[in-house]
Length: 497
Ligand code: 5AD
Ligand code: SF4
View 1: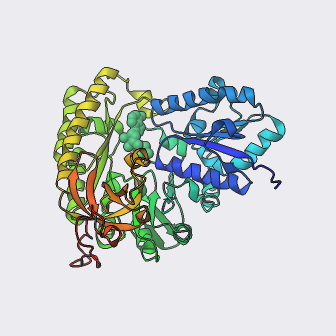
View 2: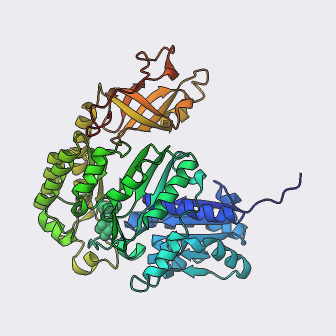
View 3: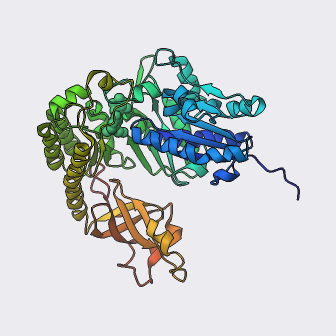
């Protein structure tokens, strides 16, 4: 049968969930233009690199990826190589200088135009550059137009799993932490109209999606005004909560100053809302926080944390920390250690400070902590966090938790052939508090919410046995199946965690 081969696109994504979503949208748009996705750069007609600028390391990753595909361009001069996203926005000229074979440089606000830009390169063989001219010029109309008309084009094959999807509710950031490049790469903060978001969530649920993660750089600053009506994140969540078929609602990332009680009340009261809050503290030293321009003190952060735990019993809180920020002395670092020790975060992401050109910190403060010191502080802080994660995980042993089964565990893929005769594989999923659980079950459980009893724990993973009909009669079934979920005493208490 004759079938004209479809053009193929290959994409690599670095960075945050926002980038993962952007890549999904770009691929969705290209599919509408007849493209199909390939995981082989050699076979691709279009090779895209969706980039991150938050730390230098992420940028170097992209340059080495570009280096790896250089030879493809020699073999196939018609191939189109494109750099998308934050780095494209920030370093348009530099990219073309370091990798002159790049045909396409497209900033975060222009991603909707990728199919046309690719076609233009193919037609003219002229490199195409599409970026915002800067914050002042990234006029709100331009930004609004691009992301509103753009989000509905989705591509299920690019999602974390077919039943989980990211939904952007806000773009940009107005906080201007002095170390951070995001306000300049993603432009001014802007919240999306609630009706657009609700429609998108409905559409995703119709496609089989069970969990949505609402994305914003400071997602809890979300607010949308229409005349007299004000929609906050809490209202937005309440407005989508009863969509039939939707099982879980998550949201990331939170800004400590905007963690208001109305939001915490919604997290506590609405059963589909995940009892997990990612609220980056960044440092445990007031002096460092002031230089970072985070607009809060450690005392404020710890009060906020206590309020989260009081208002949402059982909530899991995680954080980000930067070590080795400009002027961070050993004494100030020890204050971060103390905070991590006392705060008992579920987990923390710890980063070595990476100076970013164009930020206030780069302008004002010397990057004066040597790299070996940053490394050592990173390890020290991680060790304290890991001990807390271990304790947190140990405390879960014996509990029954509800797990959304995401797929085979990494181990399962490795042992798949050895265990080919077994109806069970090792599965992985997450609890309502975002804990990762590994357990044996049939592949039919993938995409389901199952009850699992936790039997063992490492600092990073919980291990358990599933309690469902699916494993009855199988040797590893640990207990008789429960047919009814345990009853919650009231809607004000946590669902089974
Ligand atoms: N250097 C190191 N880490 C950074 N982050 C943001 N900017 C920088 C930087 N210049 C970290 C913060 C943020 C996370 C996404 O990345 O901790 O919360
Ligand atoms: Fe960057 Fe601060 Fe905005 Fe987060 S809140 S994206 S760290 S400027």
